Length: 209
Image (tube, rainbow, N blue to C red; front, top):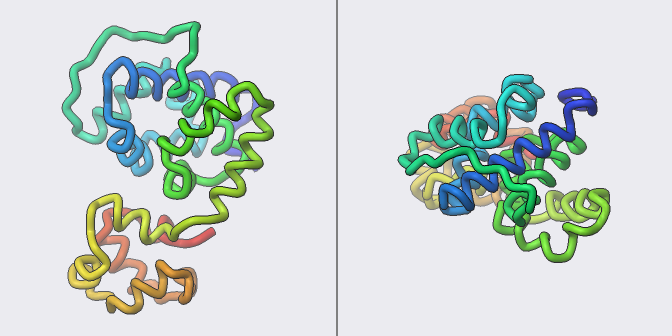
């Protein structure tokens, strides 16, 4: 099941593409900063769930401002800019919107495995191919790499030992979760709660899907 009808997919792709282009090119937001802001934003969650306000109810520049304003990041705004000559940044947002719709994964989950910088690295090879080729490659990447616990930990700049101290979860347990040697999906609700509370995310965000 997709979160919203395919009828809206083209507009959703164009809007997210324009939002990425406006943020990264027109406003000059650092790509890693924007990656982290967008990954955990309410906007990303609502967009992925098909909320029409975010999928189709505003243009890409307005969507970008919602993402940035929610984060509290200070930026120098500019007039709306959506160009016919599409940038690699636009392609990254356009492709990400499609992949999220197709896969049903959250934006946070996708970007924890394939950050925006990696999406941009795909541009030269994949932007002229059918999008199904990008989907195949992204499927491969999202099934690899590191755990969601590690993603949220590094997102806020905590070491494993600092997370252990702040959450009360044993350091060795955190290490085993991140190495995939212990299944975080089978840990206690209390452990998940302590980790998610410390990391500022939802308990389900830490589950490996």
